[in-house]
Every structure is written in structure tokens, then in C-alpha cells.
Length: 65
Image (cartoon, rainbow, N blue to C red; front, top):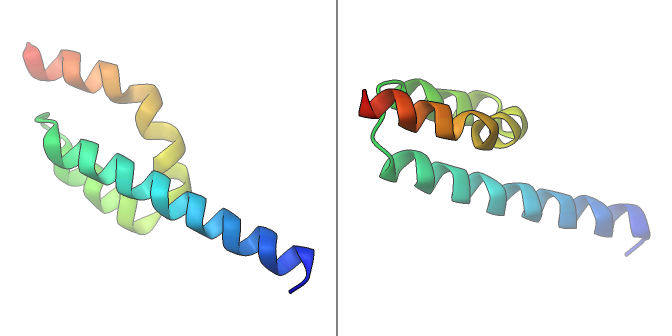
């Protein structure tokens, strides 16, 4: 197995782990746009995994209001 295939497999596995972590957090958290985030995770997994941790606190603050 060459280095490219190995790095591709490692990258996909890391993305799947991050996706699962973000998905479980979205499912556990209660905020109004939860369904939108689940759809966003399905359509654009790499972007959602990057964006969700940045806006998570804002979403939770808005849910408490």
C-alpha cells in the first residue's frame, strides 16, 4: 500500500469519526435549527464538521432564550 492510499484511508476515517461526534452532539442538543444541521451534515459533511463547532455556542445560547 503506497503512502497516498494510506493517507486517503486515514483522512476518511478521521472525517467519519468527526462526523459521528458532531452528529451525536446535534442529536443530543436541543436548539431550533437542529433538523437543518442534520441535513447539512448529510449534504456537506466536511463543511458541517468545520462550521458546527464554531457556531455551537451561539445555537445553544439562542435555544435558552
